[in-house]
Image (cartoon, rainbow, N blue to C red; front, side, top):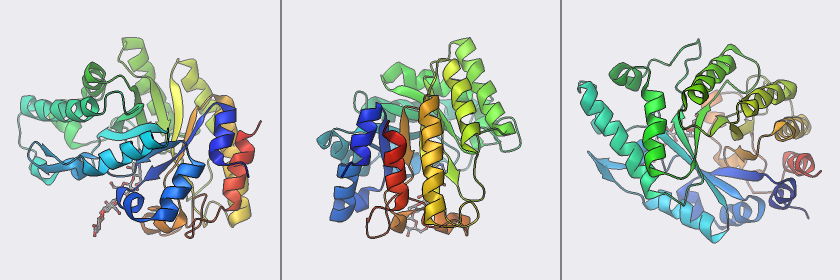
Length: 313
Ligand code: G3I
């Protein structure tokens, strides 16, 4: 049977999954499915600041290291997620009463500690995640408030100084044609024009309330690659519920959207989890369910075969 991994290798792309360190250590089926079917990983949570932090300035890299070591043992591409985000940060950072200089020092130190530690081992970093607001402009976050709008570009400079990975801006709701997709395009176009060291854009592609037309994804990938940027589909999942009715329609959508993205030049496609049993989506959306390529017993679903088809050319 052709695995996802085989099909991706033939297509010259990576196919990956978001990984949980506990499942990796404790669940044989999880480990075997991941190693057999995927050639790329990203830590679902283990590389976020709030998970790495042990106290002010302290770090525990055990979970993140386990994921990177697993990837190395199985010859997998590693996406790092994420250095700068407004969520999952350590409690000790509160309250936000620090001076601008102190806030900048803390964030720069964090970016460089983590990106520097994994130099040569993480292939691509989501340097900044979800900095664009849903209704336009930059999202009002603690970082925008403390550092001003240039913090996004600064983060890329800091990462570039210590890392040889490809540096990505990653967001949701910017996958196809939308005002937010245009905002992200403007942000990264400006970076390219100004020589900010950005290498790529991550389109998350969480699909649970409505389908994003695959042709729109292709058009967006096209214009981003025209800027000279790489594009990764970083968090793909397709919940059964409002967006698709059943497994067959889910498979068709996966086939169409992966084909569209890869044909337009996306060179990595990552699903946000391995199996339906451990997806974030049912809890978060209250709607879309069973969004991944393997069911909770790790049996391949029609969607998995559809992605193999999409990559077989
Ligand atoms: O592990 C603890 C557990 O010990 C505790 O009992 C439980 C109680 O709430 O929480 C568990 O941690 C949760 C963790 O997921 C693991 O399940 C956190 O509360 C919860 O906040 C965390 O949610 C993650 C979320 O990002 C926030 O960091 C999701 O797993 C993860 O899938 C989600 O991923 C994000 C991407 O990073 C960015 N794009 C959107 C995507 C989906 O929201």
